Every structure is written in structure tokens, then in C-alpha cells.
Amino acid sequence: MSSYKGHTLFALILGIMFFNNPLIIALSIIGANIPDFDHKFKKDNVYRMIILGLIVFISLYILKLPYYLGLIIVFLGTVFYFSQHRSFTHSIFGVLTLTAAVSLILIWAYEILMNITVISTSYLFMAILIALLSFLFLNKKLILIFLPLFFISLFFFGTLTINYVEVAIGLFLGLLSHIVLDSFSPAGIKLFAPLSSKKYHKKFGIVVIVILFVLAIYLRRFEIIELMQCFFPNIY
Image (tube, rainbow, N blue to C red; front, top):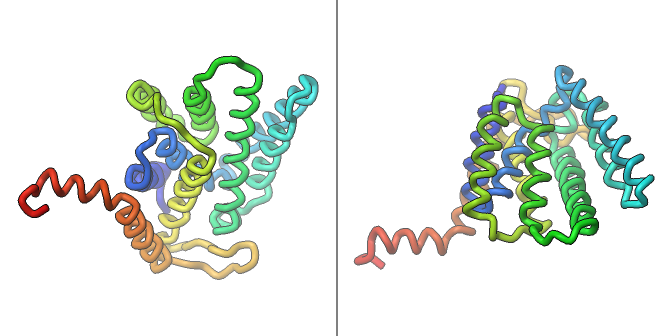
């Protein structure tokens, strides 16, 4: 069984392979730590998530702001509450559901912030939301390392832009990395739960890793060529 450290490191490697934006890499790291919220020892956090969602719902409703943000937080907590460990949240359907739910939370919260303020630092707003998300899903030991590096990176990449598609892809990659790594454990994963209880093991993980590496190389091919030209100018 992979620890949170293993999941974090694997997601970090994949994030760096696919993205340049530190916010999206950060989302991949957070995404890799989300599926294990179906574990019994994290039920207290799930309860807090549901209560938080209700508070957000009531507050936004009173303020006459889009209250569906609170509902989606409650929905996310409910998914974890009713999921058995290594079942739905560790399946492809769970990955897609969690990607959609967390993406909507970030996007709707971002839209609300942008609509109630005149400040135009949109990148910083998204960074703050991702930092808050890390408090919810990351291990406390990880946060001590994650947050300082995360905010330092903003000084160097704060002028970058971010779009909603990148948010969803970053989260999806992190969530997918979790079930890929878990497929190497003896227990395997129920890839198509709840429709099927069949377990998939390391063959599935190896195939996905190969596909991800090939895809990353293809997407980065021009950067790789430029790098090769720097080191081997006579060849190119």
C-alpha cells in the first residue's frame, strides 16, 4: 500500500512532466491525496467537510450569492462518507466524479470572489483557493513543505494565466496517479466499481504509466528538441 508520501512524489513527477504552471502541479499533488478520504480514520474530516458545505450554503443563500457552491461541498463529503475504502473513489468513475466535484468547487469559488471584488489579481485568487484546498486534503507534514514552496513559486510564476480546463486536467492527473500507484499493491483496485468488483493489478498500472510517459514526451516534443539542440548543436 502506497503512503501519502509515495502518492505525492508520483503526482509531483507527473505534474512536472505535463505542466509548467505551479498551480496546476500543486493541484495534481492535492488530487493524488484525495481518494484516501474514503478511509475510516478520515471520517472526522469528512464530517467537517459536510458541515463546512452546509455553512457555506446557508451563508451564500443569506447573502444572495450562488449557494450551489455549498451543495457541491456537501456532495463531495457525502461521496466519501458512503464510499468503502478502495472502492468507488479508487475507480475510474470515482476519479471522474471527484475531478468534476473539486473542479466545480474551485471554479465556483473563484467566480464568486471575482464577482464581489474589484481586485484583478485573478491568479492570486486561484492560488489562495488551492492553498485552502491543501489544508483540507494534504497531510499536515506535507503542508509544512508544500505551502512555503507553493507561495515562493508565485513570485516567479505569478504572471501566468490559468484556465478551467487546466484545473480539471491537473486534478484528474493527480487522482489518476493515485489509483495507478495503488494498482501495484497486492490488494489492487476495483477499476470499475461500483459496476464491477473485478480487481486490477500492476499490469494496469504499467500500461497507464507507459501511456502517460509517451503522451508527456509527445506534448513536450518541441521543448525536448530545443533542449537537445542546446546540448548537441552539431547534430541539430
